[in-house]
Amino acid sequence: MHPIVKEGYPFIFYAAGTALAAFYLGGLPAAIPFAVLALYFSYFFRNPKRNAPKDGNILYAPADGTVMGVEDIFDNEYLDAPAKKVTIFLSVLNVHVNRSPMDGEINYRRYTCGHYAPAYKDSAPFENERHAIGIENDGMRILVIQIAGILARRIVSWVDIGQKLTQGQCYGMIKFGSCTELIVPQNVTINVRKGDKVTGGVTVIGKIEK
Image 1: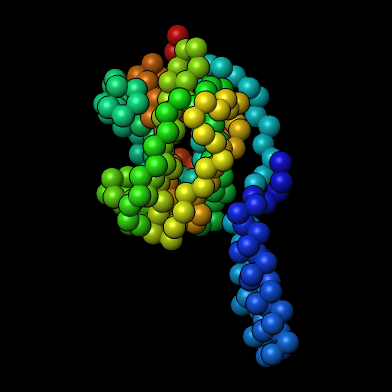
Image 2 (image 1 turned 90 degrees about the vertical axis):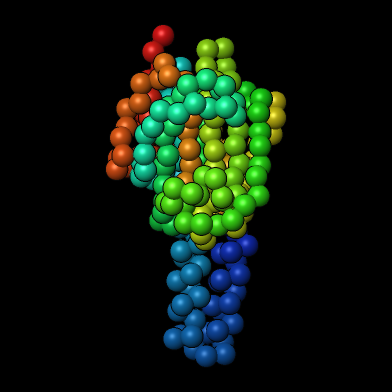
C-alpha cells in the first residue's frame, strides 16, 4: 500500500512544478504559496496504514471524520428493509480514503451525477454526485455511499461488481470535502453518536447482534 494514493500525484507534481517555475521567475516569495499547496496535496492524498483486528461481529467506520447523525430509516435501495444510517462528514483535513466496514462481496453499485452543495447540508445526499456500493457476506448486507461536497468534483472508485473486499480494505476516495453514509440492518447496535470523531478502518461503528 502506498502512503499517497495515485490520484494525488498529478496535483502534487503540478503544484511543485509551478513552485519551481515561480522561484525561477520571481524568487522565493513567489514560490512559497505553490510549495505550500504541494505540501497540502501530499497531506490530503495520504493513505495511512491501518491494521485493526479482523472481527466478523463488528463494523468499522468506512471513513475518517465527524458523525453528523445516526437515524432510523427504511432503505429501499439495497436492503429493502428498516435500517440504521450513520452519516460521517469529512473535512478537507481528514483522510479521504474509504474503507470497507466488513468482509464481503460487492453485488450492487450505483453512480449518480449531481450538484456540489456543501456536504454538511441535509440536501447533499439527494442533490450531489454520489457512489453507492452494496456489500454482502453470509450474514449481513450493508450499503456504503460516498457523497461529493462543494469542493469535490470527482468520486474515485477502485472496485466493481463481483469484487470481494476484506474488512478495512481501501476501495475508493472522494477528492476534497465530502461525506460518507453507512446503512446497516436493524440488528446492528450503533456505537457512535452525533459529534463523535471516527477513524476509517479503526473505529468500531457498530456491533452485529446475532
